[in-house]
Image (cartoon, rainbow, N blue to C red; front, side):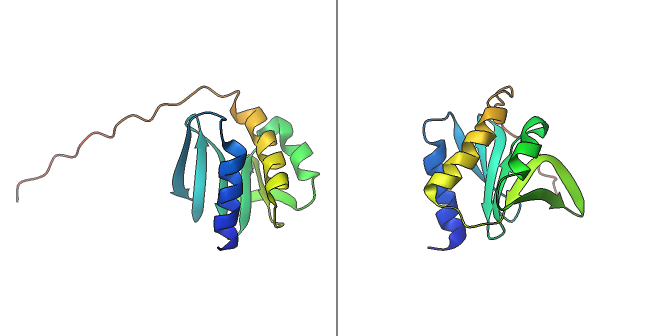
Length: 120
């Protein structure tokens, strides 16, 4: 099992019973949506956690945490954790993420409109 797969397993375990969880390929890895809002992602670069701007300083004070950069820009409210995580530490990170994401309104996934085929 790769480190990314192991991390994804830890995330699934930590989010069990949290609400509606959906997995989506994103950020070069596997993103996890809680009630329609992104909470975390697992990739070969580590764990990405959405903590919200109000918890960002607290999250960045933890060992192994750094600001999430995308295309050279800092993504406010997101933290990348680069150290290897066991199930217990992953659960701790996801608890911090849940404290923010659970305050967001639930999003429902609307069906995408079907494309009309052009007659060639």
